Length: 143
Image (cartoon, rainbow, N blue to C red; front, side, top):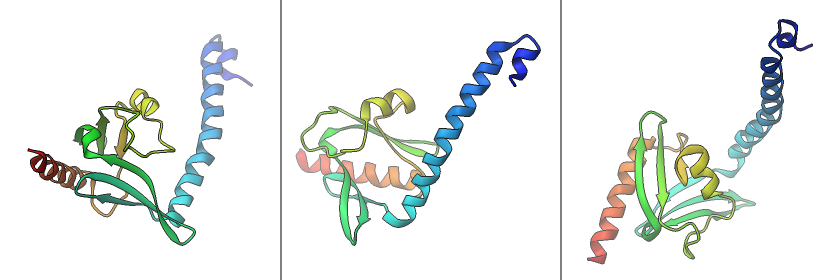
């Protein structure tokens, strides 16, 4: 049953078994997430003072994430991962709305509090550039 155990490497067999279990649990979750994305039409909006992610649910638009520029510490296009990485000043900021995001866990697992992946009309490089431009305009208005 465990091929690693047959040739004296039981540790490898157990690791393989655990990896297989994680894969069996994780694959359906990923598939459901992708299928869900076909119905919710997730959109990214770069506003004059914040970034919002909007989903279409039950016929109406709902904000599922809002990151005010005042709480954004860094925005960076990460070429090696083809994503936009965002770090926040404060995870408990009152104007930051993200009921389903686990910023602390995201930071530990992916190195950023929030990431904008591939999958929007514009690519991550263009999105990062647009966010940086909007952020600069917002910061200029403060001075």
